Image 1 (cartoon, one colour):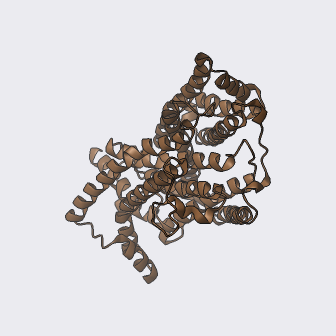
Image 2 (tube, rainbow, N blue to C red; image 1 turned 120 degrees about the horizontal axis):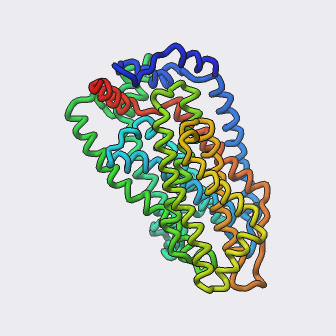
Image 3 (cartoon, helix red, strand yellow; image 1 turned 90 degrees about the vertical axis):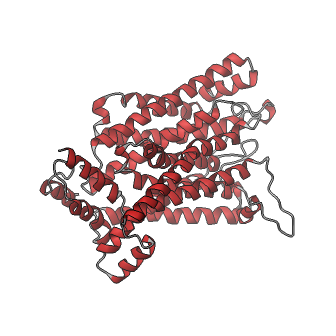
Length: 455
C-alpha cells in the first residue's frame, strides 16, 4: 500500500478545478493496460483462488456423494443452499439499481461506482444460479427446467418454485449482461486506441464492435442504453419478488406471508449496497482513486442503505406483530421458537447486525469514515445471510405436527460451498479489475468537463 500512498501524495486532485480528460483516461486505463496494481493484488487473488479450489472440490464431493452430504434432513429439506441462493440474488440487485434506476433518475453520483456494481451483479447472479441446480440432487438434469420438447416428455412443472427461479434468474442475468456490456463499449474503444500490444488492440477492438465515437454512434448508444435501463428497472422489483414467492406460495408457518415480496426486495437492496461498499472502499484505497470514488459516493450509498434497512426493520416488526395479531397458534409458535428456541442466537445476532448496526449510519461521522462504513457493511452482509438462514430453516423445522419437528446441523460441506462461492465471487472481481476498467471512463470524463465548465 506504500506505492498507493505515494501516488496519492504526488498527484493533484483531478475533480477539483480544471480537468484533464487524458489524465482521467490514463489513470483508469493504466490499471488495465499497464498493470498498475497494488502490491497485495495478486496475493489477495491467490487467497481467493484457494477458495475457488475449495468450491470446486465441495461441488465434486456433493455430486459424487449426494445432497445428504450437507446439512439437510426431514423436515428441514431446504438449508444453506437456498439461503445462499436468496442471499446472492439480493447482492446482485444493487448493481441494477445503481446502473438503471439512478441513470433514469439522472443521478450523476452513480458514474464512478456503476461499472464494478454492474460486474458485481453478474458475478452474484452467476453464484446464485448454481445453488438451485446443486440443490436438485441430480444437477445434471437441470435442463428439465427448460420448456424444451424431448422424447421423454419431461415438461417443467409450472407450479414449482424451481421453474420460477430459473426463469427469473435467466431473465435478470440476460438483461444485466446486455446493460453492462452496452456501457462498456465506449471504454473498450478507449482501451483499443491506447493499447500498446497487437493482442490488446485486437482483443479490445473486437469487443468495441467498431465504436468510433461519432455523433451517430453516441445517439444510438444513448437511446439503447436508456432503453435497457428501462427494461432492467422492473427487474429490481420482480426478480426478488418471485424469489420470495418460493416461500409465500407454501403454507408452512413463517412462510405464508404477503409481506415477503416488498420485504425481500428491500433486503436485497440493503445487502446489495452493503456489498458495493465492501468492494468500493478497499478499491478506492488500493488504487488511490479517492477523488473519483469520493466520500459523497459512500455517503449516498449509506443513505440508500438507511432507507432499505428501515424497511427491513419494519418487516421484522410486522412479522412479529401479525404472528401475534393473527391468533394462529402455529405462526405464534414459529415466531416464539425463532426468538427463544434453538435458533435464537442466530436470530438475535441477525437483529444486532441488520437493525443495531444500521442505527450507526444515521451518524454523519460514521458515513464519512471509510473504515467504520466498511465494518458496518460487512456486519450487515453477515446479518442478511443469517436472516435468510433463519427464515429458511426455522420455518421448515416447525411444521404443523410437533411430531415432525426437527433441527438442522451444518456439515463441513455447507461451509465449504458457501466460503467457496465467496472466494469465486471475489476472484472474478479481481480478474474483472485487471482486464476491464472498473470505473466508467467516459462518464467520469463528462462529469469532470461539466464541473470544469461551472468553475
